[in-house]
Each structure stands twice: as C-alpha cells, then as structure tokens.
Length: 330
Image (cartoon, rainbow, N blue to C red; front, side, top):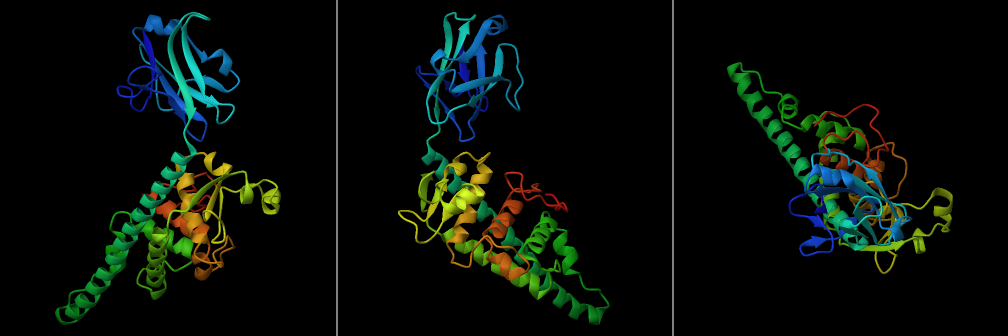
C-alpha cells in the first residue's frame, strides 16, 4: 500500500486518479516536489519510482526535495519536466518492472492560472507597499507637527524638542523604507526635507494609479510582439512581457519567458512593471540619473515595491539587480 502526496499538505492532498485524489500540477518552473508514503519502511525501500515507460522522455525524477527530509515510510522526490505542456505519469513499482503500487498523473498548471495568480500577487504587493508608505508619511507628518509644538513649548519651559528623524527611524521597518525611497528615487534621506516628502507623496500617487489599472493580460506565447523574430527580440532576447495601449485584444502580452520565470515573485513584479508602461509614452526602460527619470522608469518603481514587500531582499526576484550597498533589514 502506497500513495504519492503533496509535501506541503501531506494529509489532505494525495496525488493519483482514485477517489479523493488529484493529479499533480507542474508549475511554470517545471519542478514539482512530491512525497511518497508506504505502509512501512521495508515496502518503501522496495519501491522503484520512475516515469511510466511511455513518459520517460517527458519527465525525470530526482531523489530528495528542498526543505523535506526522508523519514520511515516516506521518501521525497523532485519531478523535473524535460518537455513542456504534455501530461505524463509517475509510477512506484514493487521492484524493477514489478506491479504498480502507486500512480500519479502529472499535468501542467494551466497558464491562465499562472496569469491570475501573478495578477493577484501584484495587487497584494502594491496594496502592502501603499500601507507601508502611508504609515511612513503619517509618521513624518506627526513627528514634524510634534517638533513644532514642542519647540514652542520648550522655548518657554527649557524642554528640548523631540527630533522627528530619531522618532521616525525608531519605528520598526522605517530605516529600510527610507533607504529604499532615497536610493531608488535619487532623493536625500532627510525625511524632513521637501525633496523627500514630495517624492514620497508622488510615489504614493503613482502606486495608487498603478493599483487602479484594469486587468488586461494576454498569453502571447511566442507570437506577435513576443516572437523571437521580432527585431528587438532578435537582438535582445524575448522579454517577460510587452505592454502598449495600442496592443489588442489586451494591453499586456505575456511571453513564454514569463511563464518559465524562476518563481512567482518574478511574475508578480513583471505585472507591476508592465502596468507603469501603460501610463504614457514617456514611461520607458531608460537610464535613471534624477528623481524625474526615476518616476518614469517602470523598473525603478517596481523595484521599490519589491524591496518594500520582500523585507530581506537585496536583489530583484530573479537574482539580478543586486543592491551593492545592502539595504537595512527588515
């Protein structure tokens, strides 16, 4: 007796084609951790786990899965797709070529599901960023108001005024929030300066506009603007996505590279980035030398979201664009 299961939900989610079981869904990365349970350790040691003979060219199986350790009666594996889009089956047989003890059909996660999850992740990330920025703005405004009131009182009573910078920086998370805004928007880190406060206000307005953008995503695969033969793509490689108000039927076309991205955080950040391109023709992936250029560069503002939501991140979600001077964490 044996069955395959989801390591993240071992008691509720069993893989198979029987009652109460479901097929495994390969994510866009093509890698899927899988657990195998047997009634005892002797049985599980006798099981040979392989793709079904007809599927040997479509998927391979590696022993072990990141974050999980084998235990008595339990083994972990990582399924690795070698071809994309085709369903296949993994089998656990009692000995080489012996009777099948457990069978697990595997299908690719529908690309629409990938798109929907990326959109939802983007919405949550921008909402979370706005919460962080509005609190920072409120902390600064409150501190400066207290400074003014205490300064007037202190002149009469000999009590020194509280310092806004000290108070705001003492709030958990604010040192990182301030450093991210200062670095990416090319402004002073002096939170009392009009330069910083105006940039913070404009950043909040930018993200509110981004959050209000309608969902307009198309799976373009390698067609149209995502084609490898399109001139820009031929010279630079197929991007994750392209966005333009003139595109139809949708405004953001997601390329194969989007679906094959290494993780969901990359896809989340791509959506945030692409929506800024729809703000207007000046929103391009240009170099940044000042605050005005930072605001019209989608990568810059999307990077702020990434660094504020992923509190320990020191690079983009795909490992590129490292922060050479580490940001405060968290």
